[in-house]
Image (cartoon, rainbow, N blue to C red; front, side, top):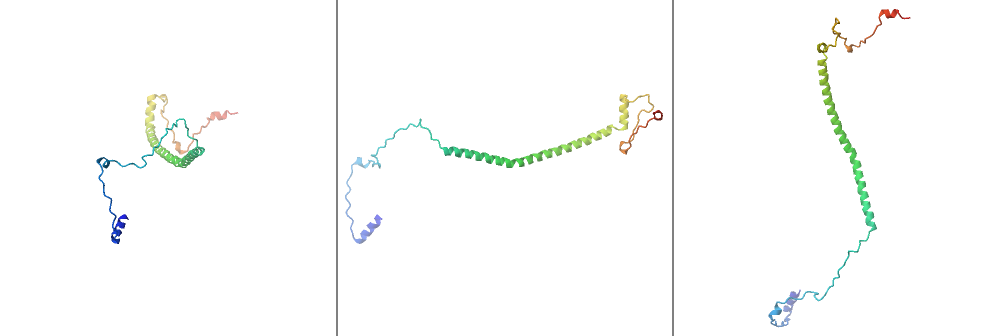
Amino acid sequence: MATLAQFFDRWNGRAQAAAPPVQPQNDRSRYRLRAFPNQEVYLFVKPFDNSRAGRQVDPVAKRTCWRAIATSVAIAIFLVGTLVPQVSNLLAGYKLQSLRSAQQRLEAERGALEFKENSILTNENLQKIADEHSFLDPSLPQRSVYLDDKQSGAVAQVTPAPSQIDSRP
């Protein structure tokens, strides 16, 4: 703004006042620093010893802390309560699958054992085992007695000898 005022002064015909002549300064003052603002103000700092001072207890802060802890525990219990059924279902699925695989393995073992048993329990094999271990009495005329098939439904029946029937009182 000051430059505009000078510009308009030239138009109005006002002549600028002659500037005061510059006086030559000595060399020392030319290199001298200017003063800092508020250089003459002196602030005294007193040392403080707060080693004996204690922090004042805030009763609201303690209540707030315990409320935050209780809220966190409640949220944790809620999350655990909602996740436990899903985790138990997942573990039950793993257990069920392992039991199914164990059942298949045991059925395969049972089939192999039944096959082995059927191959051992043939009449020829039993006759050989009886001859090797002397299970049968050699004095009997017929060494092996073959029983009827159990699946036919016939049941063995003991009939008393005729001499026992007559001697009844």
